[in-house]
Image 1: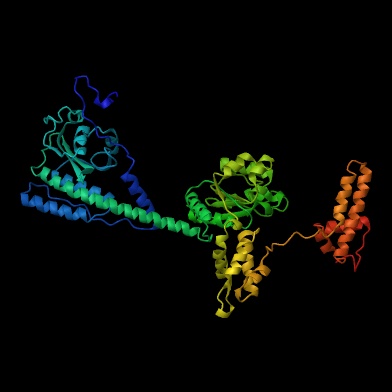
Image 2: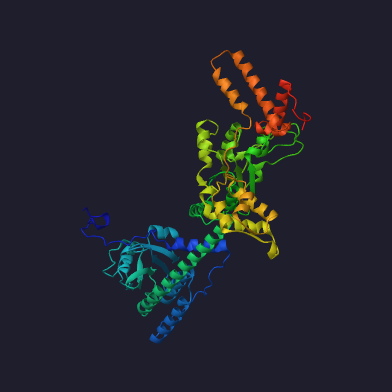
Length: 579
């Protein structure tokens, strides 16, 4: 193995001593402190109180005075559990006691890594370059050896150190803060130039202070970690409370909500996938409320419900007089949601021409209202939702691929209710409390275990929304305990066999079409019209002349059914033609 650069012989034949690396370690006390302070601010907690700087008299001390000063310092630092102020307090005490000009307190971030926590009379540039600190001295301290010298230039241990010679460092004190035979930090002091050396008691006092400081720093670190974990848990609980509206005991859904809680902290777009009635908008609202934009607007729009000719105006706004009927100025959803969240429900139904413009807004962050000449910059977090298969829509060319990937930075697939039947008792109880109000005991209702078991066996095509409707029906019509039979009558999910074809002539019509598919077009047209007329007459007979019911049997709109009757000159077999 080749020798490292620091161990190779120098030009004069000697070897440099191993250097203590001063860089950010895997464990960074500065980052922990910053995170703790940030979480405290988020939770509205004040910073930890701490004592003012302890100042010691700058004079030669007797042994008794050294002991008294050390006791005073011990009382001060042991009572301080706030790490940022504690490190400053320890360094200030050391500088005052040793009459030093400069000082740095390092904490250990790893095996041989030091992180400067606080400095006096040394700026950050000097720390980064390590120009004013002898790495040889630091390396000695990291090995657990105290270094105190009145004149480093004449000390054989440091006489060859470049930093000592170049910067004319005279008095140096570098003491390890040891805890259970390992260094938790290093206390470094120096006095460059022709200043008087350290007082005679300096080494004894700093040794005692370093030992006390090691214990105080460890206590403050443990206290800080406990406070940090507490703050994290409180913030996590506060965040998860936002998702408490989605009642569940299902492990897959709980895992999804935990992921959503993490996603909420970012500002990236989210795509919520799920069938109708699974709670997509509720989840979108929870993500907004748990995120940094919670106090900003939340604007929800159903893309399938917006008229096609008004899409651009609704999303991007318009100026007064931009088109016929534009009697006033409209901001549009994007500008209404500025600095907040825009929820695009059923994004799969968005018109292709608007998909292109939406993609431009996502990329450029600007909108231009109809009739306007100036573009407006918007800051919006997008949360989209769909019950459609967007991958299939992309393959068919109905949804733009680049828009899909822009919106689905995070995918959150909500499972349907039939895949989590264990949630049904929880949801039933929730809806009973939500819609039941205050009722006397004799009018309160509950579902029997048999009724719950029946509900858990249903396919729930309407998902949670359908279950909520069932509970509201029960509250309107039932009292006491609801059994399985009552639950069956209330349920919109009756598992019945497919009904027989109410119009047998339908089969005949399609059979006729298939039989003459290879024949002449005219013959096919006449056969289809004859079969269609027979189907309409049969539907009217079954519906006893009621046009609406007959149209429903044929799954046709009533107006289309009426036009077909007029085309073939058909009258209702019973009663008036119009019902």
